[in-house]
Length: 553
Ligand code: SF4
Ligand code: SF4
Ligand code: FES
Image 1 (cartoon, helix red, strand yellow):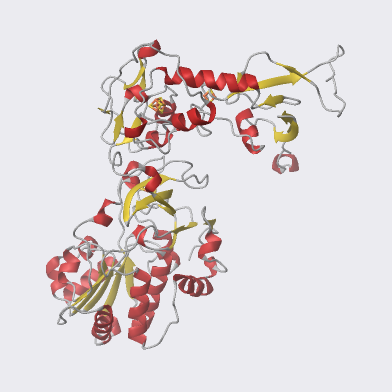
Image 2: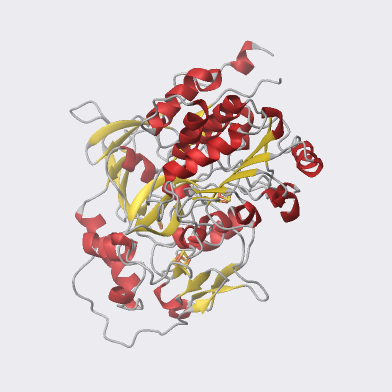
């Protein structure tokens, strides 16, 4: 390959004047983005940086000036040596126009302020004034921009056009057509990102409305992204609407743990209840989107069946100390070769590291995770429904083919060579064992959130924490190390999994591991694992860290 082909082309910069101050931007930058980079936010409805720009809402108007030219076609310069401008006498949209050399932009001139007022007046002509009962209140751009850029009075005296309300446009999305401002973000998202061209605009003028194409529904696994994109309360999540006012939600940055993609999320919770998950932008993982399956996969955290107290057979109402001591004593009474560990690809790295320490302490060599697969797609959803398969492999709990050792464990339980099993966050019947097989075990230690066949047979049941109830890290399918954060506390006496595993290992080894916080576990793990050397939860940051590709073993 020639040197010319490998050298990246230098970025061409152009000089642009924004509100009287000159800046430089890479050629090709949208005017609306250039203004944002210069600290001048331009209100917008239809524009979204990840979608095409139809320029239909007209909210992003600015004044544009082209460089004034001398008769010999050279820019006419002002006293400061910079080009003077010929200002276009009409406002222009900034979302569909790229910066060019010498361009002038006015973002807040009287003409721009008038244009914005006019656009908002038009948008509000048929918009119902139902903000007090609208679920978008608190994050509605129409409400916000009306305050910031609109006018207090309306000149409209006629009856507003009534449009369909509470339409089930899909199984998870509700449409209030009369709130729609026809920005077409939802249409473009479904067409351009979700690859499901299912909605459009019907009728004309004041009667234009969003509707599904004949015979279609907004039922894609990505349908709820239209709710995030809708700048007003026209599209709302059927699951979330009217459950909680958005300003009451405590927001926690985390990741989705429902597949190996690890979409970045914001968990919205109040008073220890998760109300919603929404996507958080990460250009290296999920852009601005997430799938509906992952988004809604949190209600089980609040199941009335959650396991709330530790159980140890033979102990009435054991506390954690009793349960851990009894589980450790039970495991130690069995020869190491008669013990196996079935762990989970849903565990964090820290938990997997501690599971490996427990295996070492017990002398256990048979351990694996349970693979969970289902149909994936080529947008975000991964066929691997375990969020941390890569972590389980890296930390040695699973071989490079997850689940490869499960059949030997199943066989061992069946033929009686395995007498004790530790099952971490899984139901062993999904690994091939039957309820009858589990009954044969002398010791069955299980951590779990919800009852299942394994917890029913467990001699020691240790209730643990769900993904929104703990901190830790995971590695996605592209080897991006990301962290999850605690949004709510685990219910009852349920404990964080790392604490359970550390306590169990300490009880088995009769030593103090010295872990008082998860940061101590991360430190020990990073010291022992070259691929994670020098990392800590704070260094992982909100957007994660890219690890080197795995080396073949
Ligand atoms: S429903 Fe919302 S996103 Fe779709 S066109 Fe109307 S305002 Fe825009
Ligand atoms: S694609 Fe995977 S990680 Fe992303 S939201 Fe869906 S299930 Fe969660
Ligand atoms: S944001 Fe520019 S026209 Fe809508």
